[in-house]
Image 1: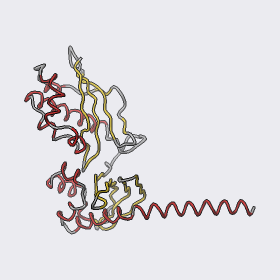
Image 2 (image 1 turned 90 degrees about the vertical axis):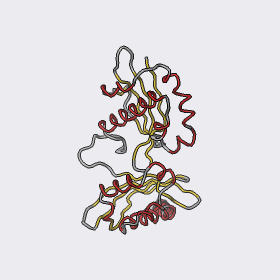
Image 3 (image 1 turned 135 degrees about the horizontal axis):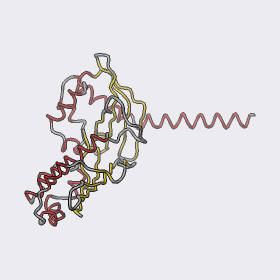
Image 4 (image 1 turned 180 degrees about the vertical axis):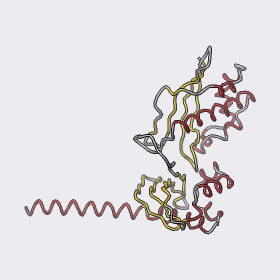
Length: 258
C-alpha cells in the first residue's frame, strides 16, 4: 500500500508540474492576448496592430480589421479566460473565451508565432454560432463556406487567365506562399492554361463537387479536392489553405482540364 501510495503521489506531482510548465511557457502569450484586447477596448487600433504578426498584417488591412472587430463585438472586452493552452517551438495557441462589458461571452481562438520581438498574434478565429455539423475538428468551415472559397478562387484564377497575368491572384495567397512564389513564377506555372485561350469565368455557372472529404491536418493545412462538372471537359482543382490573420488564405492552387 505504501508503494502504491508513493506511485500515486508521484503521478500527481508530475501532473501538477506539467500543468505548471504549460502555464509558465504560455504566460507571455496570454499577456500578449490580453494587451491586444485591452487595446481594442480603448479603441487604440495602432496599439492592437503592434501585437499582430507581420504575416497577419500583410494580409489584413485596417478596414478589414476594424470590420471584423466591430462585427464580433470585440471592442467591448472585459476579461479573458483560456481553457486550452499549447505551445510547439515557435508557435502557440490559446483557446477560450472573452467576456464583454455588456455581459456577453465570445468563444475565441488565438494562434501565435514567436519572433525577435516575442509572441505575436498570427490569426484570430471566432467560431460561428448556430448548429454545426459534427466533425473531428470544429475548425473546418461549413460546406457552404467551403463552396464559396472554391468559387472565389476559381473566379480570381479565371481573371488571371483572361489577363494572362497573376498579379491580382497572387494577392489572395498566404504570406508563406508569397515568400516562395513570385508573380512571375505563378505566370510560368499557369502559362499552359493561359495559352488555351478559354474563358474560365463560365465556372461561375456551376457548383463545385468535392471528390474527397475536405480535411484539416495537424499542420493547420486545409485540403480541398474536386471538380466543376463542365462539358465536354471537367475542370479539376486541388487547393490548400491556411488560416492566416482573419481568414483562410490559399497555400496552393493546382488545376487540370480533362
